[in-house]
Image (tube, rainbow, N blue to C red; front, side, top):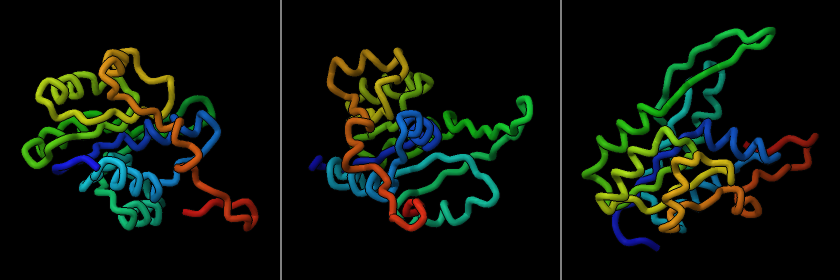
Length: 174
């Protein structure tokens, strides 16, 4: 266990889309427990697009111990499909800096290179504990941080973090 206050800042869409691209779903409850047990994460900020109708999901995530930071979403049509976009990059960076004096170390959960400047700053200040990337397909801008063993791939934790089927008509637990 890491000594001191550790906070996690999580790009929910990046994580969700990353693990789903590998054919599985993350059990968000198990993931929160993993962050708590493995790294002593006291606060886990989950940056997520706010979509009407997802209130039950948001309540579940809060019950798991996440602090939700919502981003309004935009809807646009691509062909016959509606794409929902809720880019949380600015919010994640902003909250990591607002909370800067309140944590000893930070975990950034994303594979997105847009967070390179934040991660670099945290490393320079001795506040970067880990980067949790969803898969091996994380941004090349983050590769240099692997030299210092900062990067942990979530897909390597699939066995313990995968959402299991309940057996009732193939539905998964929430």
